[in-house]
Length: 477
Image (cartoon, rainbow, N blue to C red; front, side):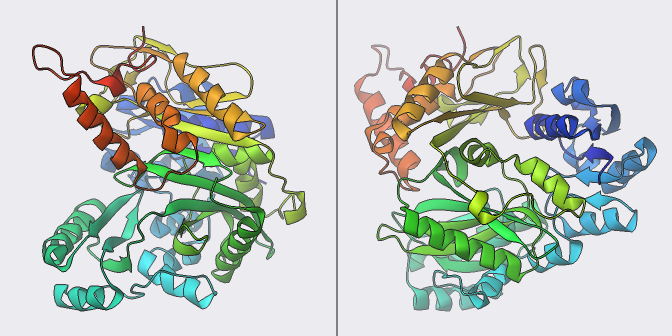
C-alpha cells in the first residue's frame, strides 16, 4: 500500500489527487515552482518542496529535482497527474530505479506505447478498427505524398510523440502537403523533441468519443463508459459530456469491449483512455491511447460514482480492481466545462494575472475542481486552466440547464484577466449543441457564425462587439 505520495504536478489536478489521498489516509507531498508558492494544494499537503524556478524544464519537468524531493520527504510513490512527465517512460523507469512506485503503467509498457504510430499497429493486431493510414513513421515528404494519394484526401499529419491536441495538422489537398508536412515535423521537434510523424485519413463530420478503461496487475480490465469530447478548438478539448448523444447501448458495449481488449493486449495497468472517432453511421475508429488520468475524468466519476484516482492508487499498490464490469452502472448525464484564463474575443489569448476576486459555483450536483484561490497569481508559464465546472443531472436537458446556472455564478476579477465562462454559455445554448448534433467541426463553425454576426452589429464607431466575452460570468461583475 502507498503510504506517502508525492504529486509531481500543479494546479487543479494536484489538489484533486491530494483530496483523494486524504480520504484514503495517504500522506501528501506537494511540489511547486517559485511561481506556484501560493498554490491551493499546499494547504492540503503534509509536506511541500520547492523544485525550481517557473520554467517547466527547471521545475515540473526536472526529473532529478522531483526524485530528490521524493527522497528528502520520505515519499514512497509519485503521482504524475496529466501533462508534464505523466507519459514519460524514462521518468517511470527512474522512479522504479529509485524504489518509488510510479502511479501509472510499467516503464516497459509506456515505452511500447510511447509512439502513437506504433500503437496504431498494436491496436490493429488486437482487432480494433483503424482509419486508413500508416503504422510506421513517414520518413520523407515524397513517401508522405505517395501514401496520402493512396488513402485519399483529406489526411491528417500527426506527431508520433504528440499529445494534448498538439502536433497535428489537416491537409485538405495534395497542394498543401509539402508545406504542412515540413511545418508539422518542425513543430513536433520543437514541442516534443521528436520530429517523427505519421498519416491518417481525416474523417470529416465525426464525433470524438473516448472510453475510460481501468486495468490491474492481475489481468483484469473494465471500461467505465464514454465521454464525448467533440467540442474542441484547434483540437484542444473545451467541453466534455457523458453519455454521448451519438452512441446507443449496443455501440457503447462494442466500443467498451474493444477498448479493454486493446489495453490488455499491451499489458496496460491503471487508468487510461482509448480515443476513437465515430462517424455518422455509428462506425468507430481507434485514434490513440492516453496512458494517464485525463483532464475530463470527473465526467466519468459523476455518472459512475467511481473515484478514478483512488482506483489508480490501489492498482499502483498492487491491489486488484475493486469492481467488475457488471458493477459499472451509468446513471444520468454529466458535462464539464474547462474555465480558462483566456480572452475568447482575442482568439483565446491567455490572460495571466492576480485573481483579486474568485467566486466559483456551488449548489446541487455541482462539482468544481480548481487549483487557485482568491489572491492567487495565474502565472504565464503554464496551462491557462483556472477550474473545471462539472454538473450531473438525470438527463441531458437538466444538465444543460444546471451548467448554465453554474456558469452564471462564476465571478473573476483581476487586472487583465478574462475567462471562457461566457463562451461556454454560448456553446451550451447553441441549437446544434443543444440538439446533440455537433461534430468536431462545431466550434470552428460557431466562431465563423459569430464573426459574421459581429460585422452586422458593429458599433457606430466601427468597433466590433465581442459577444462571446460579454456574457455573464466571463469577466465577473
